[in-house]
Length: 497
Picture 1 (cartoon, rainbow, N blue to C red):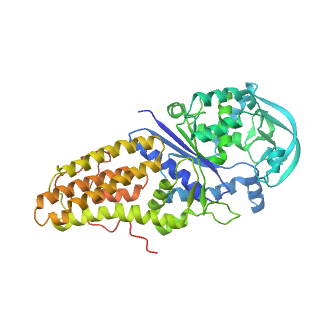
Picture 2 (picture 1 turned 45 degrees about the horizontal axis):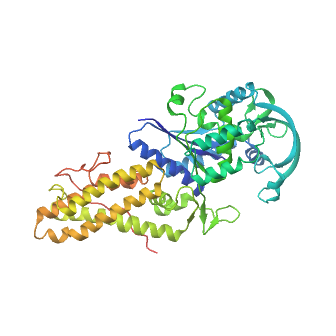
């Protein structure tokens, strides 16, 4: 099997982690777990972007060194990832030597190729965005702290790669996903592409990676940050890891950083003669009551508060189920509670309680019979096998919400099977037949738990523990006659309003 590499964006160290950060990282974790379960060698990278003007200003305000400021901010993200059960393989910070060395190496290569030149530039500069902006952008009202600047800087000949990039996008339909984001980038590339200012004079900003060919300048934060995706693989050192995992399978990003990832990054890679990513996947925003979450509106959801109240796995489940990848989604407590009570407490949780209670009540906790070979029982077995195949395909295609809905359909079918066969009635007259019905329901639960395991790793581990199943492979036929089923507390206690 080919190795699988997935990344989140590297998050800005000055941000307080919010539901947007949590969503992208959980999504990457779910996809990584799915591919690990498929037997692939997986590398999952996340990390922090620690350079730039805003970090320097925040450190000055606090009266501390920028590196010390970053060291104090970074644990907030590490703590959240731990709490959200994120199983990353590497966490990179752009202040690390392995990263700064790679940035300098790539800069030097691009410079030696003749793709970097020095020029004077006069224009409007947005301090908040840390970049020069056009008059049109300034008029849009989206940019704060705009000032007129004239200074000498270094520029990357991004325009040289415009046609080559258009050709690549058109020839590789999966390169930018979903399709409407690909069309957005192609629309952007229809007008002439300007060259990219990739330096900042140290007289104005000294918190950054020094240009290897001019010590009076530091690197523009995007020419630094994007390189994390290759520096973490050891482009400078651990060549085996780089050869094994690059090009990346998926860069997961929010739609607000599409241009930097789908235009700046590929042109940088083309110049440095590094293979382009296989796919850049831009997801939508989480809205709150139909409004974009923002600090100024005070409607930013704190994921730590949510998991404190309702547990990690229900939050992971809701975020994965409610967003169609590529589109915006609305977060509300009403929809969260409805989803929890309906899908998790009523459907999945009750199915487990029903089966384990009956097995413990009538069979001393043992599965004394094999599977149900009646027409209804065989229909469930067939449905299970179809669900396994379909869910695997949907997960590979990044249709996470569809995959979850497909598993839930199977959960509902197993519940209907129990309603139809009524083992709690059958047990009074035919102990063996009721035992076979419960065996088929228990095996269905094992399959459901494994299919849900990338999304809810902890609760599904509890289910497999209740079923005494150690087999992690997703197939029909894992449970054996005489396997024990444990008693347990409710898996998803209902949220009472």
